[in-house]
Image (cartoon, rainbow, N blue to C red):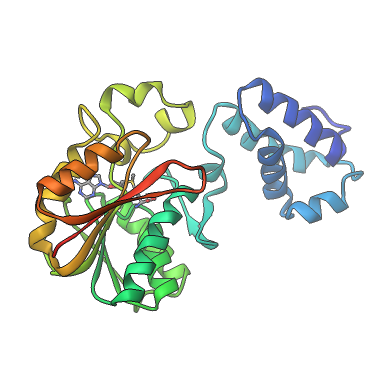
Amino acid sequence: MQQGWTVLGLLRWLTDYFGDKGISAARHDAECLLGAALAKDRVGLYLCYDQPLQADELDRIRPLVKRRAAREPLQYILGETEFWSLPLQVSPAVLIPRADTEVLVEEALARLQEQPGPVLDIGTGSGAIAIAVAHASGQEVEALDVSEAALELARANVARNHLTERVRLRRGDLYRLDGGPYRLLLANPPYIARIELDGLMPEVAAHEPRLALDGGPDGLDAYRALAAQAPQRLVAGGWLLLEVGDGQAEAVAALLAAAGLNRIYQRRDYGGLVRVVGGCRS
Ligand SMILES: C[S@@+](CC[C@H](N)C(=O)[O-])C[C@H]1O[C@@H](n2cnc3c(N)ncnc32)[C@H](O)[C@@H]1O
C-alpha cells in the first residue's frame, strides 16, 4: 500500500487482495477493517469515498490487512462481534459466536415461555447464549466454562450488556456437572471430530481455541456426557437443548433417548440444517 489512495480505491484493491487470499466476504471485510482504522461505520465510509488517505491512516490500516490476509478471523481483529443483536467482545480465548446458534436461543426462549425456571448454559465461551437468553427472557441464567480465560471475557460481556444481576458465571466441567435441578440445560459443546480439526478453514483451525472445537474421536464425547448427566440435573418436565453439527442429529437424538429423555425433537436452522436436538425429562 503506497501513498495516493482514495478510500474507494483502497477498498477496491483490498477486495481483490482478500479475494485472492481465499476470503469469501472480501468486500465486507475490507469495509469493516477500513472503517475500524478510520473510526467510521459503513455509511461514514461511503460518504468519504473520494477522500485521499493520509500516511498515518495507511499506517493504521496496514497491520489489520496483514492479519486478515493471514486468515485471522475478522472478529478477533476487530475484538468484537454481535450475537442476538447484542455487542460481544471476542478474543482467541473464545469461539466466535455464530448466527446459527441463535436457533438454540429461540428454542430456549420458547421453553421458558411455556414454563420459567432455572437455566444453565454449559460451555458458555463469550457468554453469548447466557447473555441472549437472560436479555430476552428477563430470567436469571447460570453459565459455566472450564476455561478461566473464557470466563473472564464472558464476565466483561455480561457487564457490557448490563446483565450482572441476571447472569451468574462460574467455573465448571461439562463432564462433571453439578448444581440444579434446572428447567433448561443448554449447550453448544465442542463437536468437531478430532480428525477433522486440521482440515477446517484456516480462520477456525489456526485461530479458534481447540478446547472449543475438539469433540473427541467422533465429535460426540460432550454429547455422551451431557445426555448421561441430564436426567439427574433436570427438573421433571425440564429440557436438555443441544446445538449439533452437520450430520450429528440422529446420533445425538439416539444418545438422549438412551439416557431416558423423551419427546426428542430436532430443529432446523434458517439454512435448513438440523441445528438443535432436544429431549425432555418426564
Ligand atoms: C463450541 S464452544 C461454545 C461457546 C459458546 N457457548 C457459543 O455458543 O458461542 C464450546 C465451549 O465449551 C467449553 N468447554 C470445552 N470443554 C469443556 C468442559 N470440559 N467443561 C466445560 N466447558 C468446556 C469451551 O471452553 C468453549 O467455551
